[in-house]
Image (cartoon, rainbow, N blue to C red; front, side, top):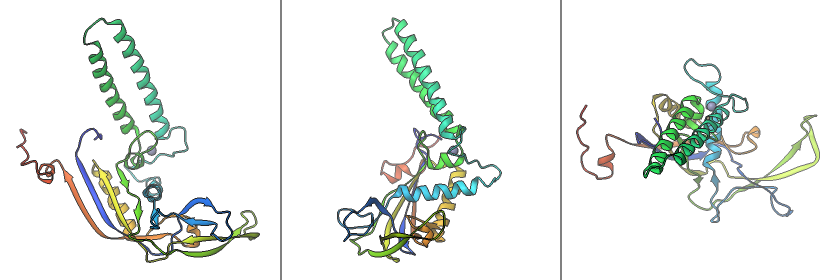
Length: 270
Ligand SMILES: [Zn+2]
């Protein structure tokens, strides 16, 4: 099931609540002593943001952890290994580029009026084969979440608070990694979004097969059961979130015509 054909689109909306304070930093340390060292990510209107990519990354590694424990019929690659899906996909893409060169050579040798059109058609066929091969070679985690060479099936929009929020300031102490003790002079302060803060949640899942639908249910279950934490300083118990008020809509081949007001679907010939 590839993206060039439409099968289904599941839209999950809901509310993410911070069960514990959240710190999602801007990644910039302030040099102004009046400011906190690590500020919370906000938009120009002062609304706090949980980037969809952050949550997706957390969910991906949780699913990776579950599937790599060796469950029959499921596969998860090690992204750092030489035979990861990304590495294999890179080789498949290289092979495609070689085929493209061959086709180009053939085209220049042929003196036909429609040589260019034929070249484009053959190249497109090769490209679709290349995409299929990459998808079929990929593990269940990469198929669902994507990798550097493959688009994933789920996307999560950036989550914003409804209004400008009042953040709080916390103080922390730097810990020496070797001795495990507090490091002298390593005091720092960081900003947090208070517990109870709510964010709008929107996840889109496209063309899921049966296995991917199971993964979607696991993801939603983990989010509902407060089993997921986002942001930094998680080791201090920050970042726990909960998904609630879930609404789910699905557009598929059976209801798409109705959904967009295109009239009734033609009866199938099968
Ligand atoms: Zn993989």
